[in-house]
Length: 545
Image 1 (cartoon, rainbow, N blue to C red):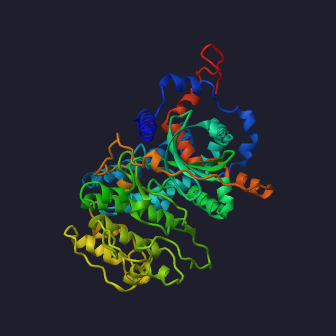
Image 2 (image 1 turned 90 degrees about the vertical axis):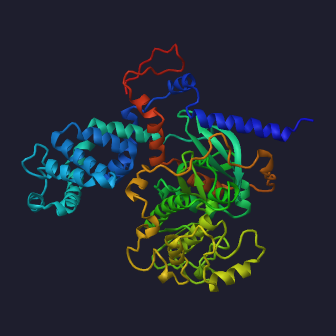
């Protein structure tokens, strides 16, 4: 007898894996789709141009398309070009391997900071120039850092003003206008369901015009209203919009269909860390993997804290691997913003990872995330949590009691001194004694546990992961094992609901969307002044962009 459930799963997985593998659909099909696309004409972008906030950091550093056009503009003015090249050299020096950094730095100082050089930075202040001329070798790093600050300050003035009056800025405005096009479900092809949350399913989707794969979290409108989840959903969406880190899942689009509010986020194909700890080989992870993932998680956590967000749900199950083996924090549904003068006291998190101050219902802040970090490192190494053994049957009250009272034991043979020490420091009962919270600038990245990690290179994505997931495996439950949601009846929407849906569905998120169009070649295609534009291959219309 034919197993229809197994057949459905095989078909769903095959289509999904094929889309993942190709990533670019079919070249001819993509070419056909893109032939119908064009940037809005400059005269159609007047209102968008007025709405753009003229902030240097946002336009020239954070937004990929803005940064690209600003860099191209700088190349047209010799003095600006030298400033650009200096900053690029300093950035390359920061990311270099330790054994060549000294010679690279000396070359930078001699080329850009000594006034006899053809590439000397003439715009430096007299004070800074004097410091550069007299600097000894052991002062090179300091003077280069100060020169970098002055160079950025210089670019923020006349070069940035000149950029706004250039054709490069006009082209940026066209892309901003295109970025703000209405987003609907017609933009995407949908693949298999990957899982489900409290308000709906998560499925794999692909952007039709770029081939980029994402995960789409669908929040059923009726279920959301019935459970009163609107505020929580909007908070998660707004927090995701603020995030800009390679170590946290990225929100790329927020739109609505007839039945759901949709969050389109990074697709992480490699499974979660909990799966890898307990289901692949022996329980626990090799130490190099534990260190690598912990380093990336720490960077993600520091980014959240820098934008005043407490994560509150750090655990291996919420850490996902991508195709290449890099990890990202996911599921920010419990995250909360730290507001001046407002205490956080709500009990939130997962039992076994919650800090003592949460369990005691005291006010708390960022240190709770470092406690959960200690639990997670312990679990990666030992294949169990610090206060509950693997498959041990204990109730929540007992886990609470152990968390509050018991000292952590390190019985697993894989623990070495650095891993024991970092766990002990993260798992301190009092938040003021916890690593990351003991004093201002208490940076966990400086702990000996991370001595093998070059964080500049890690944050630039230049360190290869110690493990790469199998591309032929779908790290998700079988389609048949993901329960369907029952239909919600008796819920009607009023004007207040419709207003909320509109507030939620803001369309493309600028930085991820710009990264997508550059990464997939759409940026180059639409910037090509000689491309043909039309509804089909017979069209001879040529649009000069």
